[in-house]
Structure formats: C-alpha cells, structure tokens
Image (cartoon, rainbow, N blue to C red; front, side, top):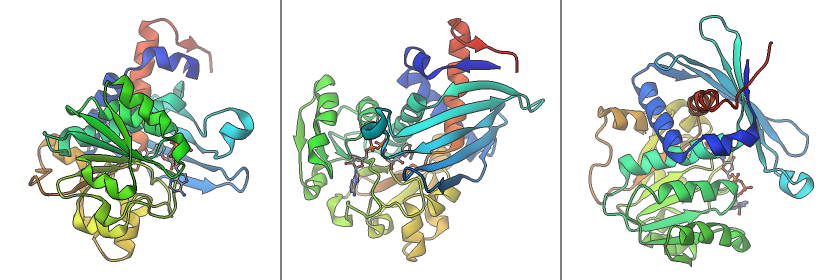
Length: 321
Ligand code: NAD
C-alpha cells in the first residue's frame, strides 16, 4: 500500500490537475462510466461533528475507493486543526486490496474549488466581469482563487455572515490583482458569477439577490437540512449538479423539491454539458445554478492523480499491508 501524507499534497497537486481530474470524472459520471455510492453522513453526537463516507467506482479510470471524514466545527478554536478532516482510501478494482491511503484535507478543498470552476467554465457568461463571494471561511479562499482563473474578472465583491472574516477573501482578490469590495446581500445583484460556500442551515441568499444572467455555484450545502439560497431561486434558475441523487437529497435542491417548486427531472447533470449532450446555458438572461454537493468520485480522481505524482517524485511511502 502506498501512503501519501497530508504534508506532501501541497507540493504535489496543482489547481490545473484537480480541475482536469474533476472535469473528467463529471463527464464519466454523465456517460455512466463512473458511479457514486450512496453517501453516509451522520451527526455522531460528539463535538457537533458530522462524519461519513463517500465512495464510488470509475470504470473508465479504474479507480475504486472511498473518502472517510467530515466536519468538526470546533476544531480550529479548540485544537488548532482545520474543521474538515478526511482521508482517502483507494482499492485495486481487480482484487479488492487496499492500494493507497492519501491525506484528504487539502485535496477536498482543491476538488471542491475545481467543481465550481468547472461549472463556471461551462455555464457562466463569457463576458462575466464581477465575481461575487458569499462565505469567507476555509473553503472560500480556494474557491475564489480557482474561479478567478475562469473568466477575465475585473472586481470581486463579497458578503459574509461574520464580516470580520472578509479579509480572507480580499487577500485572494488582491493577490490576483483585483479590487475587493464588501457589499450587503442586495449588492450581489452586481455579480455575474456568485459562489456561496457557507455552513448555514437557513438561507441567506434570496431569489432577488441574484440578477438575470448570473451563474451561481452553491457549494456549501452537502447535508440534509443545510440551505444557502432561498428555494424560490431554484425555481427561477436552470439547475445543474454534480450528481442528481445527491442534489435532491443532501444538496441545495432538496428544499425546492420538497416544496414542490421543482422536480428531480428539472435538475441537469453538469457532466452532460461537458459531454455536449446537454446544451447548458440557453441565453444571456438565464440564471444558471450549480448545486455542488461533492461526490466521492471527485475525491478518488484527485487522489489517484496525486498518488501518480507522488510515485513519480519518490515521496510515496510504500508499506506492506
Ligand atoms: P468554515 O467553518 O471555514 O467557514 C464557514 C463559513 O460559513 C464562514 O464563511 C462563516 O461565516 C459562514 N457561516 C457560518 N454560520 C453561518 C450562518 N448562520 N449564516 C451564514 N453563513 C454562516 O467552513 P468551510 O470549510 O469553509 O466549509 C464551508 C461549507 O462548505 C461547509 O458547510 C462544508 O460542509 C461545505 N463543503 C462542501 C463541499 C462540497 O463538495 N460541496 C466540500 C467541502 C466543504
């Protein structure tokens, strides 16, 4: 078994490699070459933690495995660790033997940022100029850095429930040479692309906060009960997702479907747009909404990619198991 420790990931994995791995696996999912297993995610009744497993099998890439981990909201304050903790395990599809154990924390951030970036590449208007961020926590910085590579943005605007965290994303905007402006939620109407990446259970983005023609990637809702945007926005938008089954059960679409505002069949797979079997954005006035729920196959794709790089660079630890 090969081990790629968390400390090695930053020097191995690039945003470009994560983007390619995620775009490829979304396409494979839509052409039914790869499928995700049902997600297990439990509130364990300790440290307010949510813990679970996401797995799948990609027959095209011959990648089988799972990510185990979750969200510990008190980690940073109490233990000095980031709130997300996860490890990815890969198995040999021919024998079922474990083949690799890979640190999943940075990879989770990179593959999640890659997912919204892939959605921006395929669904945002080409002339998008203003990038809007709702959220300024750990994931938000990765999201913004990756998103800014997808269009010729001229400005970043941001809102966060905890305004004192906004400098986290202001720094990323400035590093990319762009001005940053803190706005009220109503000010998000100026944005051509919006990413929401918060841990809220009550919607903060209302339908009238988003202007016609906007692409919004909702990345924070990955559990039953969480909700970042008003369900009415999904009824106004064309809804895309990584995985329809997850979108309607643990993603942002769970609420709009439960309220009868949209049907499961209204949710499009982003991979079909990548493959050219779904037309994607139909007009410049349309709101496109990507419900990024986070699938196990994304984790397996970036883990397989990083194992290859680790072997090439001689930093994978080989253990008998
Ligand atoms: P974090 O704890 O670093 O940041 C949390 C963010 O949510 C901050 O911006 C905070 O101000 C905001 N927030 C907290 N309470 C809020 C409230 N009541 N209303 C509005 N905003 C509130 O967390 P993170 O690591 O950045 O993760 C953010 C979210 O993304 C989590 O919900 C996490 O589960 C989710 N996530 C999704 C995926 C995916 O693939 N879709 C992957 C990783 C993380």
